Amino acid sequence: MLMEQKLERRFYFIAGDVLSNAVTGMAAAWLAVLLVDTSWPMLAGMAVGMLSGMGLGLLLMPAFVGLFGAMEVMLPVMLTAMLSGMVFGMAGAMQAAALQTLLLGGGSIGILVLLLTYAVDAALRGRGW
Amino acid sequence: MDDSTRKKWDFSAGFYDLLACGPERRWAPRKRELFGNMHGKVLFVAIGTGQDIRFFPPGRDIIGIDISPRMLAKARERAAQYPGSLELRVMDVHALEFPDHSFDQVVTSCTFCSVPDPVAGLIALRRVLKPGGGLYMFEHTGSHIFPFSLMLDVMTPIWKPIGPEMNRDTVVNVEKAGFIIQRVSNVYLDVVKTIFATAPESLQ
Image 1 (spheres, rainbow over the protein chains, first blue to last red):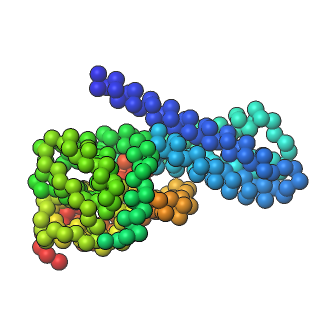
Image 2: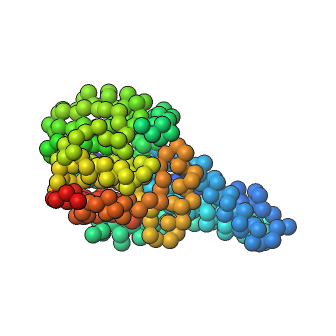
Image 3: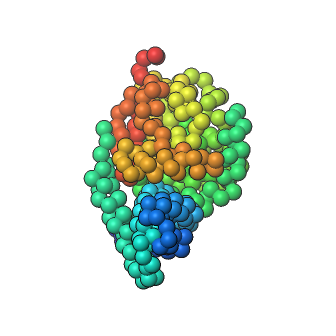
């Protein structure tokens, strides 16, 4: 019974992490291409995408934190927002992107960031001195 | 009493439980494990709205303090359910109203991300701890790993007006305050940690 409860809880948080990062990645990508178009220099597009992504991440964060955890949510969500914004800000300055590409690309960045933080966390957890 | 800190947490008391719901659920097993070490006369610093009371082992003798009367007003309902002795008092950690060596243990939970002068606060805790007494902390700190360190530096000025600082090196602060670190264990990355330190046996 206790094991079942633990597994349910674990699944809830993993699902929450996936949802938070995927949604943030998609939203940051969408916002970046909304702000940046092909008339922009690539570097400016990247910078605007990064800043807008981080701003969006900060706006979305309280909802995710309240549901799924503090640092475990904040850090990957902010990284996802920054990276997705950068990538799609840069891409938006080069060519127009289809909505499907934004959703798939932004969501994938979110999942990749999450996997990276899981890997680093697994290496560090329980360690100390 | 630090007025600006009290006002900040009085303001945050209105929505604190809403934001703390996810973290408290996620951290529940580690907090229950850490607080399971409580014994003797215990001082719990920054008890807030009392979210942590459910993780206290029963039958302990605990004094919980917080700088915010509004936070404590919420904590009182939870404290009433605790099966042991739990007294709540409004108090600033920088100006503890307890005699020297009053407590066997001091416990903190996400406290020293917010105390304005963390080293002074920790020195005050050392004063009220008995020589050799234990300091148990569940804290989030800055990171030494890029890009997490960058993210925490970026978020700190944004969150600070209504909540904690996210880039403090609390382990170093504990050492600076004269405690002897016994064990530090990562709960999440190198950011969320449990810290166990002791006050020196002889007065320094």
